[in-house]
Length: 178
Image (cartoon, rainbow, N blue to C red; front, side):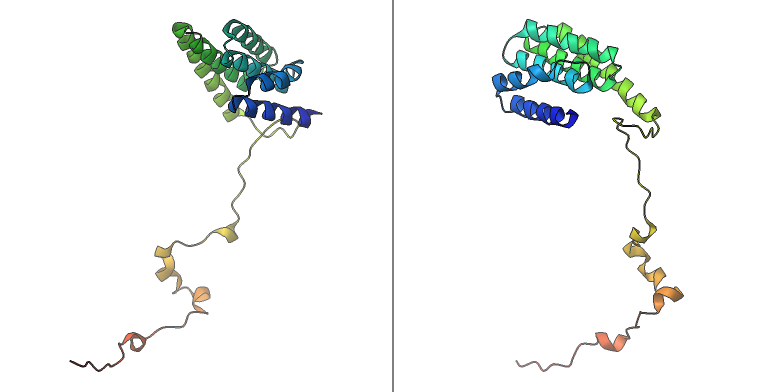
């Protein structure tokens, strides 16, 4: 269920990008009911789509609702996304001063997301996205070309090395005809 809703959300977002606004709004409307992260994101894109269709007042109301839901659910990323979308909608409605203030609020929300991600630790629970750095396997490390001269003198590395004498680099005698 959750995966199919996420896929439908991605599909609707793609339709917005292709300027298929009516179809996108039709797909986003049922996804926006509820209080989970997918519904909040769908509600944000629903408002964005309304703005793109020229329905600026409705867009502002819908995106404001998404901001409230994101705050209630403590979804910082979605709150930042909704504020940025609201700024875009306000700018399209020629409300430049409000848009500038909203974009500043969106940047502040993004900063809160960044600090939260920096403080998170692996929680090992479902539905939590945690990225961990994988340890580098020592067998995948290769010496830089500048270290080749040093390596040939090490006993283990020199076993397969055959020295090349200067005689192999002498030019072959040739006859030149005038």
